[in-house]
Amino acid sequence: MIETLLQGVLLGGLYTLFALGQSLMFGVMRLTNTAQGDFIVLAAFAVIAAQAGVGGSAWLAVLAVLPLAFAGGYALQRFVLNGTLGKDPLPSLVVTFGLAVVIQNLLLQLFSADPRSIETGGFNIQGLQLGESLSVGALPLAILGVALAATAALQWLFGATSLGRAFRAVSDDAEIAGLMGLDARKLYALATAIAFVLIAIAGALQGMRTTVAPSDGPLLLLFAFEAVIIGGMGSFWGTLAGAMILGITQQIGFRLDPGWGIWFGHIVFLAVLVLRPQGLFPKTR
Amino acid sequence: MSDSLLQVRGLEAFYGDAQALFGMDFELAKGELVAVIGANGAGKSTLLKSLTGLVRVPRETVRWKGEAIGGLAPGEIVRKGLAMVPEGRRLFPSLSVEENLLAGSLARRAGPWNLSRLYRMFPILQEKRHQPGTSLSGGQQQMVALGRALMSNPEALLCDELSLGLAPIVIREIYAAMPQITAEGMSVVIVEQDVSLAQRVSRRLYCLQEGRVSLQGECTSLSREQISRAYFGME
Image (cartoon, rainbow over all chains, first blue to last red; front, side):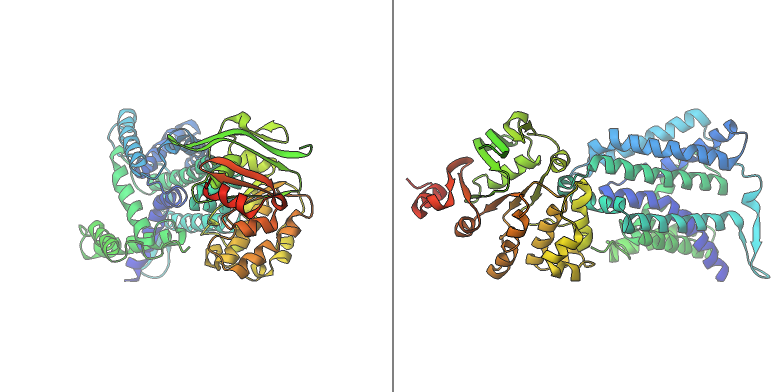
């Protein structure tokens, strides 16, 4: 039982990273990025491609991709997604859905349909012995650490800095925020840039932990979406909690029957959607 | 007017195809308190929104210290020294009282207004500084909205319906702060539906009717009948 819980928490760490970018973009712009999963896969392939250019080091490749993700996210929001924002959520859904199709086909064209992974020099198979019958992988533990650090950093950014105050102000009322001298369009671009750094980290760690294929995006989006909905839209600790609940539930399902894990997660997601559509830990206002 | 801060000439404003202001002239001098009165839909709020960039108007129709500023982005206008207290207060719900006030200082203009001065003027806000802004009473929220605008250290403060929905005692408390605000030469425009209140606190008055100035002048020189006719459009 303890092992199942532990594995669930570790899996929840990964799902947290899948979902934080989604939570951030929804929290600031009320924008649902339906290409979230495909951008995660794109980031993983970007790291694989960069690895060859930096002499094989996975960590150097990740460091090279992060600024590109930041710039790409900023430009995407500034020049494409800002034009889709408004009272009607449909334009942003259609545009991000279109981006998802483009990314999947681009990756198929460039890398074929074969699954690939990021070579970590053996780090992904190292483990820590926690007792006689309990051990955890070093990489999943590192992923959990990164997820906790990213959640805490976002919470600090939003709760304790003037940039976070500006993000919350434009999210509340962009028109009045404009009267304070805030440029909502630049702030939206910055929020997406930060979300894309998180997406790149999630993609890199996913590619190190397992294999990635161009068609993986929709499933990753589903996990991200489920974690955000379970936790409550726009709350980072809620997203972390939602991801943990999803991870633990899936692990319990896997333990009962290897084919049950994913749909156990879906059942919890559907139950929350029906019984508490605002999520378990929604943003308090 | 020799020391004119703000000059509006022939201002026309539209919401889509609907015209809200028809060739309006308006003037504000340094250090003066001007009231704008009129019935619902007369164009009072549209005038303030046009001055602060929330409604786009032709560049040359609004001049600030001689510079044409019509249609500039609200952020550029606030950095030039024009701040607004919007109708209905419109505090940021996810920000605390203090964070709402600090949001006003994001325009980064230097001047006498800061948190400690605001807290001296409205001590209740210091007591409640960590509470969400929107959890306060209507009057206290209006103090936050006023304070938030002052935190940008404006040279002209535009107040849209400060008294709306507030009890008379609360209105008196808020207007009691006006002498402190204007003491250092700040110009103030107040938009009001309450005519007698507007006459009491201001030196000059504009009355709007259906998007046009129907009457203007020194408050002391205007009779109650003149104002009633201009306000209601009675001949």
